[in-house]
Length: 409
Image (cartoon, rainbow, N blue to C red; front, side, top):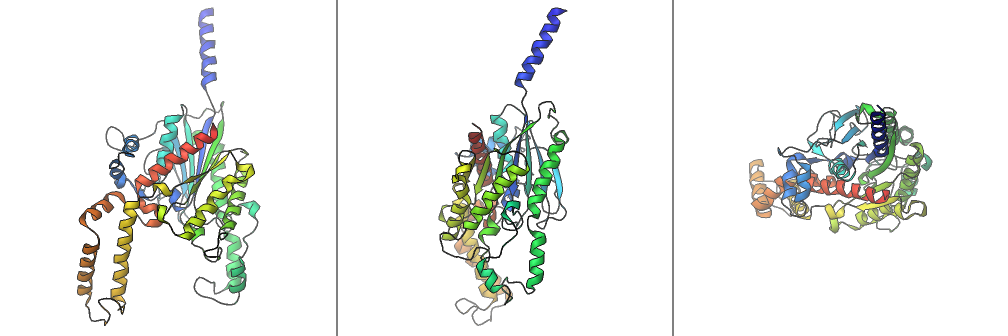
């Protein structure tokens, strides 16, 4: 009897020594954190020997997307305006990418979350919970604006131009625009924080492996956003100036501090996913924005606990080149319809059938059958969504997880 009691005590002690708090990771941002890579582009990952091993982890023996046995996810998303928000929960697998108007249903797409979870599952011998919140078309200057940044402030250009003119993006009713701006400011920041707190109030609802006796640990945060700020020439009007996006750096610094404060995790590791659209051939404004995104990681209070991960190296350059040709075809279609003086329909005599035939031949001359096949195999969306290329999103997710694992060490 004594031996049995001793054995049980030893087993309990061993289990207690091994048991650890549930590791919780938060993913947040806009459309690229949602993820617009269709599952149908998975095969393209296997075409490159460098990424083929990653595809093997993404698929089971049956050829279907892997289902993680030790990683669970809660995903809050909805329409771009935040209406019809809904939560998708379950074991992590493909399908937790962009979901449009059906936030609780598998959308057939992935974002960074899939390989992010797969990487953590392989590295950590314990359960993992991912809490993801993302909506398309949301800015940091307004929608995700953190509390400590204060109210939305007009840029010098806006102060000069908004009250006295309208059109080209300038509001017709300036007073109403100001009132609406107050209502919109910080809404998605609050959605994000409220959802994280809701999930953590009852982790077992999402993650059955949660042990209340061990609790949980906020082990990392990944931020992937930026497009709506980068293209906003009114909030950031100083084109081609080195400090054009300094405000974004300032706001992101506030965001990191506020998230840590509001979630009660003052040292939570934080990864900035630096916008990589257009890859290594991006224009000056994109390059300047990348510098502004990465800048907070160099601040004294963030050294060693915040990392900036460049996503430009994961941009599919070969698909980007095809996308540029597709843009030329689209532009030519516009020229034909508008009777452009420098193109075939300059006198407006071409019929619609003749325009279609001309455009079809123009496309055939510009894009080869091999390029067309490559596009269909690897791309499923527009350039600002990283071409909807699963190879790109898979590499990003792994890089984010690797960065957080390094920060934890």
